[in-house]
Image (cartoon, rainbow, N blue to C red; front, top):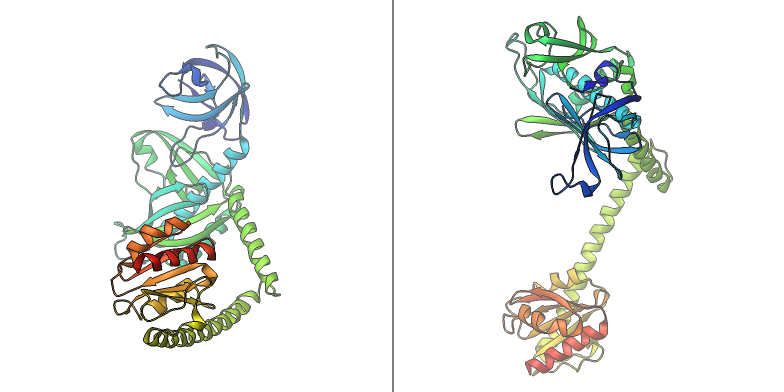
Length: 433
């Protein structure tokens, strides 16, 4: 059985240990050629993955530890090694301390915040995840069977979450002690002020933040935690969302919370500077800018609508009498009444604008219309269904490095150059004659 040094002292960073077993790891199972081995030690400070906390990493001698898992009473270390590891070999072990302390800060922060939600609104933590970018807890609002008459909140909104965040940080600022109590039997452990019922009957570890008489949190846990709450440093809630019948709280703790603040403050400062504003004045300046942009957008909408109306009137006239001249594309023949299509260039309208214009001719166009958006070197094809626009694009656009698609009455054909676009239009004119 591996002696677990992290249960005796979470601040052990280096120690000596003897290898008690070595087996090949990797894929396929037991492939010694992978350079990975499963190693057990007589004693270890490497915490195995469990309880929502990732495992410790580091070195056993010169060999890198890439994973640590629990297997009954043994702790299995996955080690990357070029040479052959020997059972009985004595090696000096070192822990990746920044990773361990990061896990300790985050895990203890989760304890404190969960305890505050429980005390404030009867919120029971039914799920916990430590991700790379944030942590989450899933809080279920449940009635207290010992106090059914006390009203409970029906919802956790951001205001309530921030109130709990403030209380959690007060626990950190008080530098309350964080103690681990170990019990052999369930009955002894249940004398503690637990916020959650025990799930097992023996070898029980209870983590208590504060004293048992005045606990900010008290719950069974096998993870690693700092000796005082002050070492957590900071808790910051990011957002709250409904999740199934619970409320998912996104948050971070410790150095990660500070790093997130630094990143967001830098972003906010850069944005404020771009508006020649202080951080405090930035929200008002941004609202004023958004109001101006909305006004410009409205003006642009009406200007484009008027331009589309003007283009439609000119196109209607051309379709009616065959007069083309002002709107003939480069390299395209003049439009005549007997021509099978008309190419209509749009100098100041985008492909999306051309599509809005095309809607007026779908299903009732007297011939195939090619609306050419010059700025996008692309066409919107529109017809009454004959010829079939989508089919024309699928069959012929690729001849000139074009792409697109559509249905019978409209389609898009997008090209890399105006020359290719005009060659496509010329091919259609010849094909349809």
